[in-house]
Length: 298
Image (tube, rainbow, N blue to C red):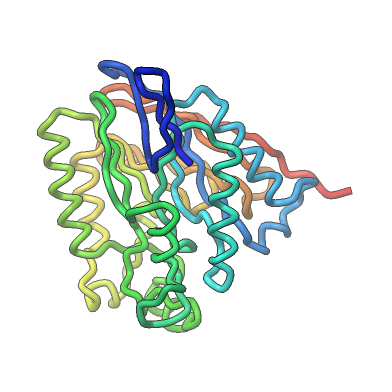
């Protein structure tokens, strides 16, 4: 699915692969978010194009933008009752439209399940099958990229069939991070900071979109403020989605940049699109690139 070009000129297809010649002092990459394959709500938006057509246009535009690779910040699919088809559909669309490396982080819609016990029907199992690990890091020259799983709830609080419980705990839509991932993140950020690399973190939720209910501590999850402190003390930027809008804010010296949906619901008058980011040591700039405008159907 992902193509890496070796120095010999030959190509090799590997998950999350990337190749860059020599020292890298500047990078250009695209960010796509909230593609929501199979989401029936996306069809309610005022558009002459179907959700699938919008999604393909955005993916094709991002892939041909001059970016070296694409980052996708979650909500690739929609709901667990149709994960078998939705994951296959999303993966097929990526293969059809993207001919540069891509790196993904999961969103809440990607990791729901329909039971409170571990199951092959769990979105986590589908994610592992199609896209690999839930969190990881990679380096390109002077830069480090850290992918996060911001929907790190225990299985019983990801059970889509128990919406009352999920809404009470905050796990229906909001983010969370477990102690194991938090420990990994701290170690990874320490190592990358010590190496002098500029760090870009990416995931679906920003810390502001993490749950702040009693269920967080009760389930051994990390307090949102602790996640925010760790990231802002090390990363130059956090790239996210979830809010279906292009926004920019800051947390200390760290920029927080969200990207609009590639196909699902967006604010009236907004467009479906992606971000094009330019990264230099210690700084990042991401511009919004609208691709499909909202239009009433004929």
